[in-house]
Amino acid sequence: MQKKSERMDRVEFATLKIYEYVDDLFTCISDLVRTDIEELMNNSSHGLSRDELVMLLYSLFQGQKLVAKTESRGFFTPTYDEIERALNEENDHMHHSNNTYYGLTSGAMEQYRELKQKFKIA
Image (tube, rainbow, N blue to C red; front, top):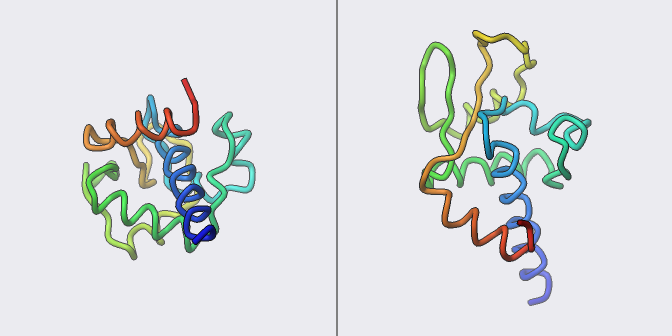
């Protein structure tokens, strides 16, 4: 039972980090798999493997906690395959980008507040 609790804390911590990365602005999804994510986000890493990250993102998108956005498509809820493809995108760092970005929805706010309290983050 300890392992289930530890895994839950790990997933909740990763969820908090994924929310924090986009607290103010949309972020390129592929940035989540960069080896320098801590430096890039000026925050600690989410700590997930790529497979775990895809599963968590899929759950958050399907639960309408996150929304994806591309220049050509606008806002949308990505499929599992679209998330995997977005993680493979090379960030072009352009104002009018072809990359897939993600951001918070109002549906994430209560969970975000709870996670900040749980992990004692102001």
